[in-house]
Image (tube, rainbow, N blue to C red; front, side):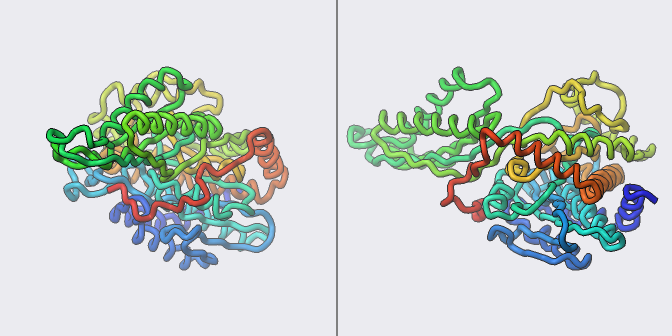
Length: 471
Ligand SMILES: [Zn+2]
């Protein structure tokens, strides 16, 4: 039996433990650095499987790492298990929160972590029966949504000796991820002024809220002169109080600043900072900028993408049955034609009536990506990295919606999660048995970073924002 068939049978032999794990994590949705139960579930499975365990990676209580094997290259599988606030939802095809205001797995990370751990376990079992030097690692990474845990883990050196990193994400499609992502910094701008009676002594007051408003206006004017793929959004966290007749002595605004690459983002952060300083000057207030978190753009890796595409071709998409398609059709009925067309547009296809993806998207499809950000980016700057998309949701389902939560423990999602694990494990075994693949992946990364070496977008004195739940 060849290595890939062997490992795919291995995945099938143990998959129930991991679909069960995914369902338990779905049932305990926890957000941004508060994933105590979800992390404990992954830790317990790592222990059960005999991995050597490192807890609190990079000092983060909900980050964990498991390793198995001796010598040889290190193959890493990256998992996530954080949920999103406000998306509590039952597993039915209509909006029905399980708990008013509760959290929910609106990005499918319950599946993400469990399938990555399934792939790591299958590779461990393969290593145990084949006499090949090599180590497999599972990284349990919290707080992907807004917390940038992987960027902190990279900064701590947790990936320094890794040869190849493999991960995946739930999606409408079955494909190798070749879409770029944006570098993204979250920064708070806190203004301090002087309070006074707004009617009796307005001349004595200096309004921090005015400064926030002027900063936002300034940044909105700046948009005309930014690269067209840069993105800036803001939220006012502190308006300085609720009384209009008291001049606001403090106010705070949070910015998310995104650009195509790391140097472009750093330049944009400096420009936004200048606008903030201008607002402070105009209002005679003081401003302090504080970086909360930051992630880099994802670097592509052509040799790994081609090797993964070959594995996914051999493997084929998940086999969905009529019941899977029926449920997906019900979900599809809750989406707009625009939702569906937008998702098809990302792979350059006209919409079809298929409820679930049963085809492999060509590597060279004419894509029109919807570009977000992910902390996988930082890993990709220091380790050759590649990602799978597997069809866990009805085609057209937008991420971060109740419909994703509703499909998060469906039989179709389980099938797609297992298929993702097979693709990742198949590539992992290729990397362990084909030293040329690792060498080519490394050379590709070196070429991409030759002119702009990786510098963490996180200043040295910024610690993971553990105290800051998104809730
Ligand atoms: Zn996600």
